[in-house]
Length: 393
Ligand code: TYM
Image (cartoon, rainbow, N blue to C red):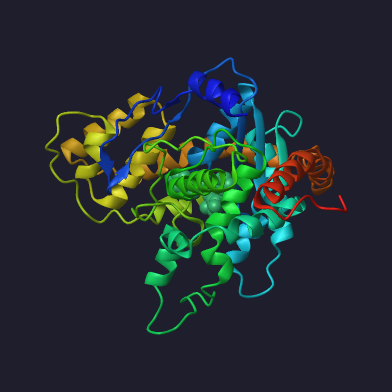
């Protein structure tokens, strides 16, 4: 396994910003990448894995941070595993939530974006029974200090009011939240992943998975395949509020299924009360221009650069330099481009061949397809740790 992995790795290189390069300097302190990816390769046996929580519909952060790479890797013909992380969604559960419904919608959106259940193995995390077993085994050998350094956990703890162990949104600081990186490591390691395409915010979790796998192999012998690190240049999309990150719960997102009315409402709602500030930079590249703008205006330009032809973006940079009155026009132009981007996805979401029934059909097939490799991994770990193989499988 080790040498094959090495050979596969040697052939594949992460390449930051291969086409529309916008550099690696920072916007709002973040990497302003809109196109990262993996170089074309003729290696077909690379295992790709990634997942998304079913906490709402897909937004632009999910698409440009993750799904765009899922599509490219699928098209390159790799062995792709894409799933909906419904167990992970439970780290923010305080009452019954119809995650099943949200999972089906998420999967229909995957399909609408171009993920093809015939070419990629698309499944639901909770359908893979060995996941809970491997998470338990990995949990036994993971130091709690390691988990306490996880950003998701640290963030949640830092926002606790006073002595409370309940978060302001009513969710507990749960055992599951602390163990979030173990569950994520399990998803990654259980199918023997090589590459995990994720946005910038999930980089640390992938690093933790790599650490856990290395520690396991060191203590119990070579058992787990070690995945590749996520490049530092992984994408992070800002929110429409000018905040550092577009997020589902931050009310600052652009959704892939948002209709033109909603798109216009969201974009018109972006505060642009500040007049253009004189730009010091002579460059028109977004990485140079946007950091000089007020954050919300910068977010509008970020998305304009992402979606509109370059000359449209440049035209609006010119207007900004000249301090013309143009924010209304900027917003309607951006809204048109967003709606144009969304239109085919919305249509494909509602297509007759993309229903709850078709999704359930491939979920059943794919759970069966993924299960053997996951059993193989968990059995190998049981043996390596010394409890021996299961007697009932
Ligand atoms: P989740 O559901 O928060 O996000 C799904 C994917 O979208 C990316 N993303 C972004 N990328 C760029 N800019 C943004 N503003 C932005 N917002 C979200 C995320 O980086 C991610 O790639 N723990 C994971 C789900 C998961 C997983 C896994 C991922 C569970 N197990 C195993 C990979 C491998 C999560 O909550 O992602």
